[in-house]
Amino acid sequence: MSQETEKTTERTEQTSERTEQTSERTEQTYERTEQTSERTEQTYESEDLSGLVTDFMNELPEDMRGLIPDSLSAVEKIKLARGLIAKVATIKTTTQDGPGSETPGKKQAPDYSGMTSLEKIEAGLK
Image (tube, rainbow, N blue to C red):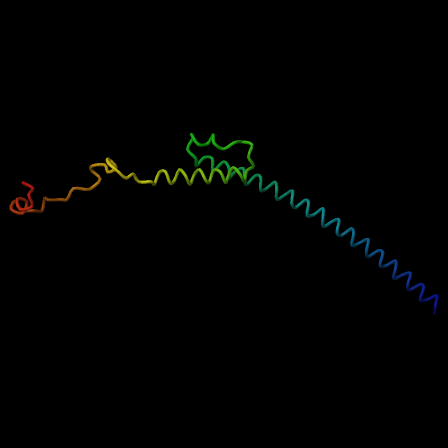
C-alpha cells in the first residue's frame, strides 16, 4: 500500500503543479487582456476627448480661444474651456445698474386708440 500511496501522492503533486501552471498562464492572459482593454479605452477616450475639446473651443469667442494653451491635456483644456464659457455667460447676462442703464423705448406704449376724446383729456393726453 505504501507504493500506491506514493504514486497517488506523486500524481497529486503533478496535478497540483499543472494546475498552478495553468493558473499562472490564465493570470498572464488576463493581465494581457486588461492591458489591451486599457489601451483600447485610452484610444477611444483620446478620440472622444479631442472631439469634446474642439466642441468647447468652438463655443468660446474667438478672442478667448488663445487663453487655452496647447500644452494642456484634453481634460484640463475642457475644464478651462467650461470655466471660460461660464464666465462669458455671466458677462452676457449681467444687468447694469446706475445712470443710463435703462434704454428709452424698452417699455411698449399703451394703446389709446380705444379712448374717447374726453377720456384722453382726463388722462392728460391732449
